[in-house]
Image 1 (spheres, rainbow, N blue to C red):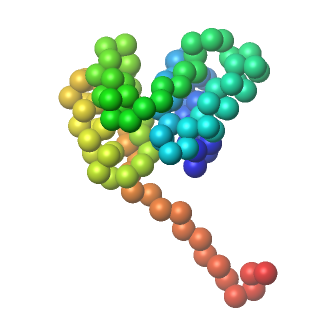
Image 2: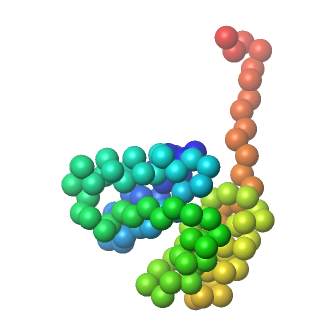
Length: 111
């Protein structure tokens, strides 16, 4: 997930002419840093993809910054509700995908 979630968001943001600030989980920040590095090496202009490391203070800064127009979040329900409330209180569009689980079906003929 540390790579998959940004790879869902980055093409949509950049493809529609937007810059993106990615705030990865503090527990696994390396994938986000690598994705931005590789995108820059591939020719994405500086300042289009940005990484902000941190915890609650970083989230508050993103949700309250006047230049940021929308926030997308994937994670727990508790944090997602807080992000949604803070972002919308500051007049931002907010998309929060919360509490998802990964499901798998293993059938008897699976090797």
